[in-house]
Structure formats: structure tokens, C-alpha cells
Amino acid sequence: WEKRISKWGSRREISLLSETREVLFRSICDWAGFSLTEQEAQKRAQDLETAFSLRVDSEHSILAMRALRARLARLRGEAWARRLVREVRAGRKRAPFGSALHLLAYHRDGKGKLLDERSAAIELLNLLRPSVTLSYLVTFAGLALHKNPPWREKLRVDHDAHVSEFVHEVR
Image 1: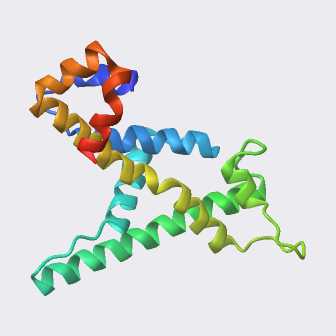
Image 2 (image 1 turned 180 degrees about the vertical axis):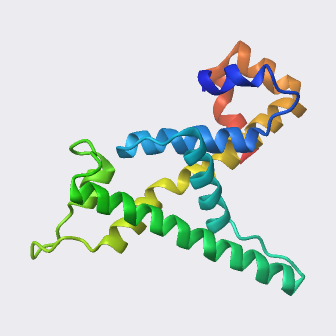
Image 3 (image 1 turned 90 degrees about the vertical axis):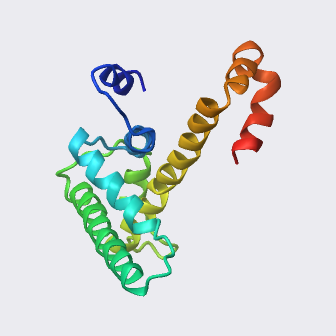
């Protein structure tokens, strides 16, 4: 967060949703056992959001285009995750022992058969996807704090006493 926030001072505007999505996505990727460049993180996080946040629209042609974009983003995401799994298995990419990427890349079923590449990739995406969803919740919390200064003061004065109530209000 500190790294990202330090870049905000030079901007006229920021998108809290975009910034949050990227910070959370990069964090979960680090946790999963791999790091991404800033550009790669932006691209992959955006694809995950596009792939898994199809909005219902009354215009069928608009809905069809959104569905197509979502499908293409999902395919790009799966191809990227498959490459990660393939590179780990081939020894071209290192995943720390015990990390999510390592466990998925080398998971074997009860018969000792290696999990197929596509399934491992989809499971990896299933671990990464909640970071996109969570970024919406964080953004809504930021908006609530911006629009309701009394909440900011309550949380500043006695965070522990009010945080649960605030979270329920945002949710």
C-alpha cells in the first residue's frame, strides 16, 4: 500500500477500485508464490475482473459484447495460468516449496497422477479471483468513509468499538 500511495501525490485523480484491485492482486500473487511486474499485474487483474464480473444489461447486443469480452479475458487468464504451471513443472520458473503455485503445479491425486495443467491453472485462478471481489468491498468502504465523515471520526477515536458495525454498514 505504501508504495502505491506514494505515487498518488503526483496525480490529480486516482481510481480507488483500480488501485485496490492491483495492490490486492499483486499481494495474493506474492502469497501464491510468484511476483508480477506492475504492467503484468494491471493486465492480469483487469482480465480477472472482466472475466468474472459480467454485468447484466437490458440491451442484448451490449450483453453479448460483454459476454464475449468476459470469455476472451477468461481464456487469456487460463492460458497465462497454464503457462505458469507449465514453467514451474519444467523448472523454468521457481515457486517456493509449499506455496499455492508449487502445490498446484505438483499436486497428485490418490493414484499418484499429476493434476492436469488446465485444472491446476483453473484452481490457481480460483485462488486469485477473490482479490478482485475484495477490491470492490474496499472501494465501497473508502466511498463510505469519504461520504460519511462521522464514520471516519468514530473509527479514528475507537476503531475496535466501531469497526464491526462499519463493515456491516458497508456490506
